[in-house]
Image (cartoon, rainbow, N blue to C red; front, side, top):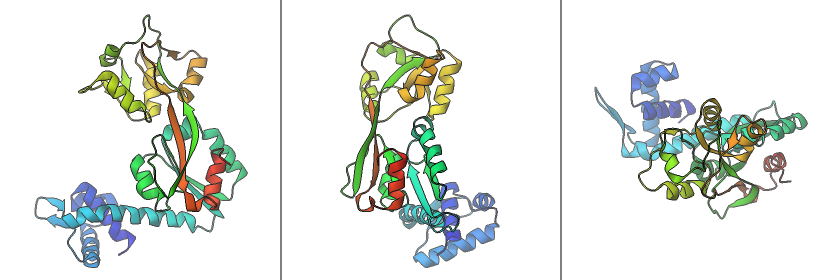
Length: 284
């Protein structure tokens, strides 16, 4: 099997349509079909059930999917590692808000001081997948997590502890109460542990926010442009509090802080890439 066969498999598995998968890959449908047949021959079993109307994964296809995804990622990361352009490479994963609002100056300073190192950041990835596959497979040298699982092969280092603030673009006359989170003005974004558990206990079962998102920059924009209110880490909110574009709201309850950790494979702690990642994060 080769990467083109895996790409065809992944495209069809996501779209469940050979024609649309071919359009997505910018190749002919016959080429997609040929690649899948070659892959099925290599695996020794059918990966898709297909008729004139529907396409679905077989049990083998479902089981093969995560392996195909990992093999493609390994192939992409190998191109970075084997590149002749740079002497070394560094791949890091973690929440985009952490890279953007807390470590951006450190990233820029690191690149200026280490032009020979190719650096890649991954942020839009399921946090569990970052650890379960990417870190353990060696595709990521260092990962940042707010709620890292314990693993015998992984070293965990505390990076920072941060306050979560309830803020808005407009002041409020009264302290925010539990029932205020059911109003149309509340904008929800879940932060690291223990925030999700604490908030779920606060608002109770069956709660659905009027407005919810999963991107910190969009959340910030919403809070700055109208009278909405919501939770932000201090690293994001503080510059806007200093310029009075945001105000911290009084609360009738105590908001928990969150802790971020750096994780890397223990037996790779002397690897130059891991050392570069530790240096970038201020752990050296």
